[in-house]
Amino acid sequence: MCSVNETPRAIRTDVKTSTHPRRRSEAFTGSIDAYTELTIDYGEVTALPTSLTQPSVPDSSRPSRMNGWKVTSTPKTDGRFSNPPADQLITAARQASPTGTIDLDGTTLSVTGLVTDENKGLTPEAAAPVVHAVADCQAAGLTTLKLNDEAKKEPSSDDHWITFVCNNGTWASQFDSPSPSDTEILNKAAEL
Image (cartoon, rainbow, N blue to C red):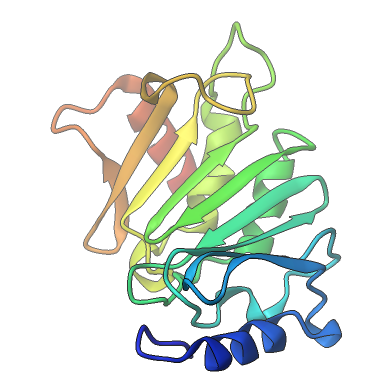
C-alpha cells in the first residue's frame, strides 16, 4: 500500500504492480513524482480486476469498462477503496439499460444510465435492482447512493439525482420526509 511518506520510486513500484499484465490494466497517467491524480485504466474487461479495490494512493482513480458499463473507483482519503459488489451492480443496472456509468468516489456510489425514457424518469423497476445489489451499505463501505433520474448519461445538475444515505446498514431517503418515488424505490428493492 502506498503512503504519503513513500518516495516516488516506491510509488512507481506500486503503480507498476497495478499495471502488470496479469492485472490487465492498459495504462496509467498522472504524476508519480508529484504523487497526484494517478489513473490506472484497466480498459475493457470481462471480469473486474482484483486490484480494483486494493489500497492505492489518495487522489487516484481506476476506470474500467465491462459489458457496456464504465466503472470508476476513487479511493477514500486514506487510499482505501469501498468494496461494493461491482459485478452485481452491473448485472442489476443492465436490467434497465445496456450502458451507463458506475462511479465509486470514496464512500459515495453514483449510477447513471438507468433512465431510458426521459418522459418516465427513473422508475422503481429500474432503480430497485441496483439498490438491492448494495442493500447492506455498511458491509459495502458506502455512505451515499446516488441514482441519476434523467436519460442523459452525464447529469446536468445535482437536481437530477435521487440520493439515499446509509442508516444503520440499510438505505434511507436523504430527506426526513421522503418523496413518493424514494419510498417506491426502497419498497421495490426490499421485495427483491
